[in-house]
Image (cartoon, rainbow, N blue to C red; front, top):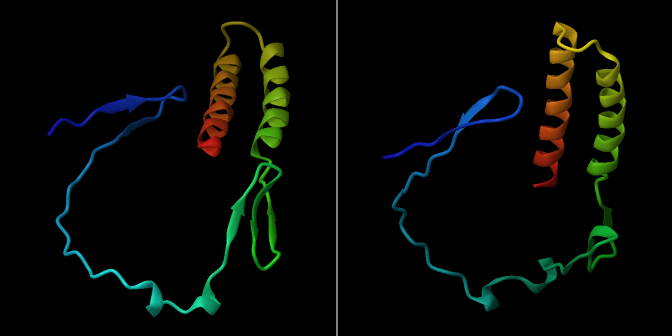
Length: 107
């Protein structure tokens, strides 16, 4: 088995591997067996995350806006640090962590 090991921008390592497990296949239920009263329709949209047939509306989480605001603050602080200093290297890691968090939230 080959297991790849990855390094991210923030000096963290992770690995990813796949395991195959044989499971017994269960019989599928027929549509007649499911109660229609418990069914709900879901509409995925752009403005709202989703809307249900029971008139529930769930808003989109605004991850990107919050992350952009935080990133701009941290980058401004980072730009003021003295070049080739320990504080600047720490600050660079903070910026990289925020970038990484934004990427993970959008997945």
